[in-house]
Amino acid sequence: MATSGAVAASIPALHTQRMGFAALRVPDYRSYWISNVLFMTADNIEHVVSYFVLFYVFKSPVLSGYAVIGHWMPSLLFSVYSGSLSDRYDCRLLIRISLFLFAGCSVAWGLLFATNSLQIWHALAILTIHGVAVVIRGPAQQLIIHDIVGSDHLQSAVRLMATGVQLGLVIGPALGGGMMVLLGPAVCMLLNALLYVPQIVWTLRVPYTGHLAEDGRARPVRIGIEDLARVMREVSANRAILAMVLLVAATSLFIGSGIQSQMPEFARDLGDSGVGFQYTVLQMAAAVGAILGGIALESGNIMRPSVRTAILCAAVFGLTVIGFALTPVYALAVALLFFLGAFRLAFSSMAQTLVQLMAPARLRGRIIGVFVMAQSGLQTGSGATVGLLGAVVGIHWSLGISGLAVFVATVWLLYYTRAAATRTLVMD
Image 1: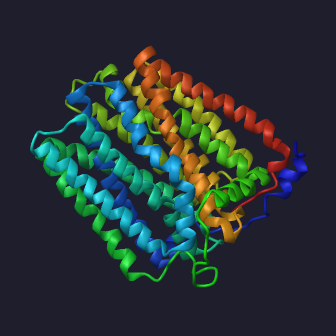
Image 2: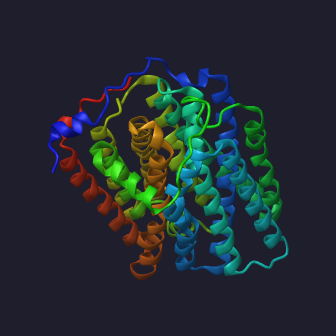
Image 3: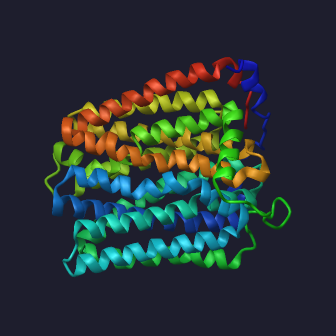
């Protein structure tokens, strides 16, 4: 086992300017951030409306759990290969392909809702296509961000992007819930496809390929099992990168998007009558917490990122999940979701930034692919840990057990990284 000094040596001494919202001062990043908020709004409108319709049409926690599995399985299987594609090809093209797939999913939902012809296999097929779009987009978008702002402002860019994602989680449920009531699910989903257009336009007008910061062109990359093995060896050799990959792997495997997909049932148990208002508030609570937490972190330098800090934030996240799972009080549930969102944004944005900055340029896309596989792909497991297990013991117990598993994992990671060694990284 490596010593604590080895962990410290694997973490570069990184410094950024003391400037709040630094990345937003870059015009091309600012326009990308705005288009990404619209993208995430559309993505979350689709999730909220489709999960709501699926629950009240089929009333099956097993289906909700399997829907999560089908949605995230492509990220589990193909994220490293997607990272290889991002290293090899123009990332703008990969992002455009993903956006057309996302828009197609919204149109498909809308047509199925309008014709009242939705079947279980339709839902699983659309969620799988949506998952393919997610895995194509993931590494490419992170390389694009690095290309736009460079290393100096990468922490700001990643944190602001994560905050924008959460902003979409607030706007999406609110807008989707209102449109669903006023216009119906079918019209809501058809209009939703239009929100993907601004980012398609952005990719057509900017010069960033994901590789300009290096030498202006993508270098040839072999895509295969040997390449995958080489990347995994690179990750395992750097204990700091490995710790961050394991951290997001644990939180994704045990929690992931399992809360979101099961939220209709949590809302019902907490008093929602089926109209959807309390359900919408619950969906928005974690996102509001993440937004306010992101603003505080970005503007006040409240929490200086390090491996140890990221792990501690994830530990608090796990305890908060347990509290939400067990409380019968609606107001307390909303408050706990608020803090859950803030701590999730904190540890996930720290982990992503550390991995992206420590990854060698020649392998950056593929190592990011490993990170995306852990962060997104392993959310497949949350369909089982929260959803399928919930069908046996109840979703409150299954989520509580999952939160406990995350907490235990963070305790082990603190030991693994030797807390004293990880305090050497300071990023202002």
